[in-house]
Length: 454
Image 1 (cartoon, rainbow, N blue to C red):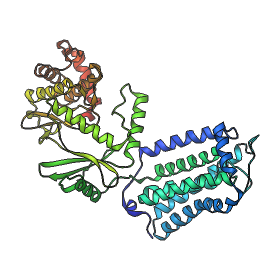
Image 2 (tube, rainbow, N blue to C red):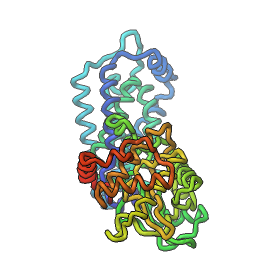
Image 3 (cartoon, helix red, strand yellow):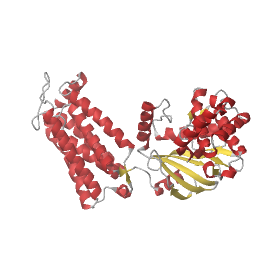
């Protein structure tokens, strides 16, 4: 019996979403520990409602509660061992052991007992414990195995935990606070195991993407994964009727990864990066809209082929980049003043449409037969004020300085201003900015930000 599906064969990696889960679970367990035996009015009412159900339901709720052990030990652990999924078995065993140890330590160090003024019908065990040990271990095992399982089995495991929680309260084994702590503890332990050893990334496979493209009505051949894969998406390339297409797929983990990235940037930078979207479909639709808005403003930008949700719940964006050569791949003698001025012209058209690119540098510019074109609108957003666009100008200026030197980069910017309405008030684009100190500062920044030109 193979419960792990194809996920066991997918390369493992450490995901940013697991850091997010680990931090959140740590906060929840800490808050729950501080509130042990001090329930709110809602918790009292919830516990009383469940715990005072008729005693004749005891056998039913006992069997339901035992489902936690049945699922963890029978439906996952034993098949994993017999199917020789050694990594999966190791992850689950370590998760169970770590959850057991932490739960024991918390139970021994935090004062236990009954809540004053609250009667408890203890139908199994010795009464409420913090955190609920069996639920902590079961949650850790189910969460550790989740990335390896097919979707129906993942949901079955979560449903099992969901019904075990009220069963524990009915049997008098835990208060609501104990249940929440147990779920958070197991969830965090599984995230820690995934961070230690890596886990399947939840990325769709090439056959799944091919089926999804067919569902969206996009003819595609020779679908392949790109050599460089970002943290927040899966990128592929394919041949279509109109030429080579780029495919961006957001799987089940990317929404959390982008939320974590935005929160991190918000803490350390004034500008927090990409616009936060709550669903994967909103993310690809937003990017598609930014591309269409840029094209409407006269910018040479990719052509949107399709955007939607298909296949295994994945959000897909298919674009066709303007055919050309990346600016960073041009020979030195091909980087003429006219080419550089054309880059600034396109930037000016983008800003005239009140858009901010978000990562406007030499690596996102291609040179076509008609002139420069801008690609990669993943971080694009609408501009609230002219100052929002200053970051684009500064980044592009430093990037070009790394290719052709600070003085030529500045002069190409001034030439581009004559072609399209850029932000004329920006000090970097004024003739006085051609001073030696400014050239030196730009050269230094271009060296530090050399990655922008790749």
